[in-house]
Image (cartoon, rainbow, N blue to C red):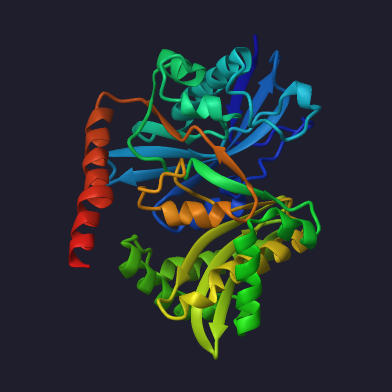
Length: 388
């Protein structure tokens, strides 16, 4: 039987396992603390597990308070526990079909949550996790709504609840960057290679920018929002993203790097993307495009430049960060699915968000969230389509 302890002070003389995902970085915790969240860093001390390595696992937890009446906590992509059989490699993510691993992992998550609640004393309604678990094959993914699926069964047994919305996209494309450029291109769909070369041939220019290009990016983003009916952050949100990254990198150069790639034609901005590069992974965070010159395929050349730079930076994986769960042509985001899967990466499906409730009033928040989801994801989009 494992023993578990949670502290806010890093224990000394213990093996420390870092979580490499950017959502568990000091940078991201600091950035979110500027936007309504309070950051907390905890150290999960695990000993005596039959399946996971003994040691210290750092975890950032974000807490948001609502007029001092109640709070909610959020744990993005954690905890990442190291399987003993992996010889301390960070390859946790694939044991949803192993009953023993899964049962103990979820038990550790549950006990960790109760430890944290006792430390925080924030009148928490619930704690929401985006767990770093993926379905390792299509059979498990297709069956994920079945009562027989192990994950759902154990979540029910320990009173986890599935919210109506996922905070992080559970479905994404991961591109392995440990190949040369020729192989990366060869692994793409032929039309994607053609579009990259077309953009280059037609004179589309790509430049890597910083905070100075945010006004240009935001104009493109507003155009994208009107066209596709997507929600916008304020412009100050993106300024703060770059400024916080620069500040945190000045303190510790291992913090992620934020960049913008801008595509222009005859000096006219056509499209832009914002990327994050960290020690092991690159992430495509945001994208925006103009309605003009779409036939020049600037989005393909943007991604290709970011992919090559990420590889040169030392990243092992390029995360396209979010696609629909299947290639359903009737899905409103099917075009996004088709675009991101064409670059040759592997499609993965995470389990999505789960909640651990600590209050009988959780159902009120949950029902309010369902109504909000219905408005923003369903009803509002119908009005937008009708106006078009």
